Length: 106
Image (cartoon, rainbow, N blue to C red; front, side):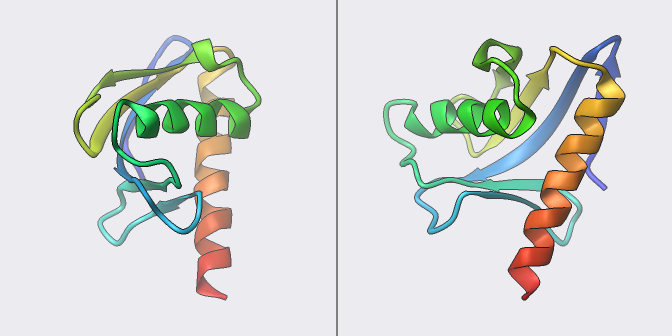
């Protein structure tokens, strides 16, 4: 399971972003790390914008509630999500990754 850091209602977590992917999905790799595949290229911040947009849309939050804390120019990023209870946010992220991983197997 991915490592989540909870500070009151804020949830921070690391993930690896794979730009220029054929699919847009969140999965958990063999080492237990979250992996986000995006269509957007890693140029001029397009993959970062797509990353924020992906989580905002999936969690039904405003984009201002999803912030890249570090890794703006790297594939490994540290994200913080605010806007709802930490438990609910973690459950949604884990559920999203599990659903994508299940679809990937079939």
